Image (tube, rainbow, N blue to C red):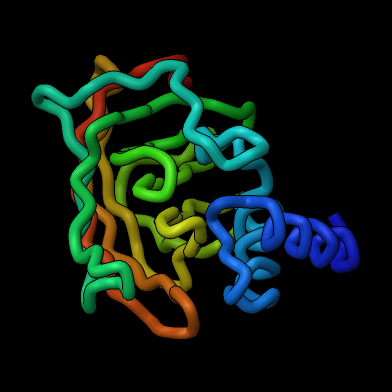
Length: 192
């Protein structure tokens, strides 16, 4: 998607989508489109449809599994913690494994995501916003904010369960936030 198409899509979203009110500057809508469509490569990896609604396939409610994060300082919405109600751990597109935790619906929808490339080894890895490397995204308030720096550390069991943590920074509306996340997930779909 070229810059002109991004801008056109951002303007259309600003006018049409419930996530963007009239007083939201176009650059916010533009950055949202760029983050979701360009930097994350394919919103299917984030388990979102073309209208940015969560897909339901393969999710389950946590029992002994979890995905949670503390955000410092609190986001403008007041969100300083996300504790997932729905979890997904699956390969949603051919070249990555999605670790997703979400809560809420509509305007209250929030999602944590750590995306790992297929073939990555257990251990500690840097998080950068690059679809060929591990990256993290927080989606809330109609905006996706990708990791600008940080790391993820994880270990998989023989049954493919995965657990670990991620420490990273995101930029949201021009301000930097620290995110500390922990996860313990069981496959909800195909995991290579």
